[in-house]
Length: 321
Ligand SMILES: Cc1ncc(C[n+]2csc(CCOP(=O)(O)OP(=O)(O)O)c2C)c(N)n1
Ligand code: SF4
Image (tube, rainbow, N blue to C red):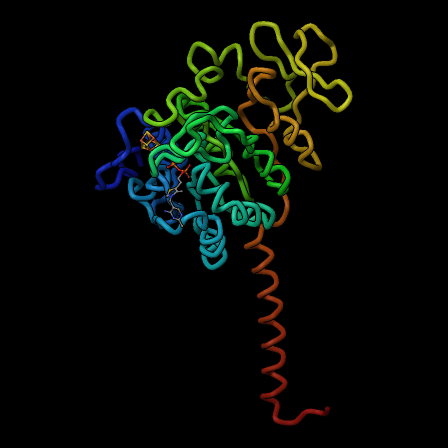
């Protein structure tokens, strides 16, 4: 298998230069590298530019209804646990109209991988602000600048106890591919925020930290069991319960732990924002617990057993009450 095997015959309708192209290419290559079969792979999306993704993958796909992709994906995985189920959603799709669905799919730990394309704007509808837009964001619906406090998507994932939480960037295919692979190998609900550029309505919104020249100084590359160093000589520590930047020579620089018993560390990392702090990328959190499809299967097997015992009893023709 190679990338070409995953390219569909559909004309790609994203704007030239849109960050979605890189995500698409990277996913196609990653699936080929992992040897994933097309007939066992499905992409489920909601509504938005990013949600056109399933058309462009030569796998199974379902372009569903606004905000409901995680729920439909939950159903798909429940009835066909053999499938690798990926959800594609935008910051508007997942966090405005779909906020509720996003939370509940995560808390159930259904074995689906949610790719949240965060461009901090509604792209498809031509540039209204979204729940992740920063304060001051001037958009079609906030001509005087947004006064809302933005949501940080991975704080929601941590609050809903996601078993896999990660962040990557559309302009770093190598990093993206590694995260996609880690998510694919995870059994449980994976939430991956992709910092994505909407070249038309919110161009360069992430550039101050993920631009090719800026990322070395401003991204914190998380590595399990490694100190949280970033930039030339900086690190992250806790002062009481508050994260604080410090020099890398400081002995109290935090050491990252991916597999923690709860999502508190992931929540703290997900809440960091530039320019006060670096922007973490990589795997924030990963734990293992039974998934929704496994629990459902167990429950149904028990029910089937009960039913078959009852049927046997009934077929005996005589029984004592
Ligand atoms: C029920 C309903 N409400 C509103 C819309 C309009 N609408 C379409 S896509 C969208 C948001 C898209 O933004 P996002 O999820 O961030 O995706 P992007 O286009 O940026 O990839 C909205 C509000 C709709 N299609 N259906
Ligand atoms: S409007 Fe923005 S997000 Fe949508 S295709 Fe164009 S560049 Fe991409």
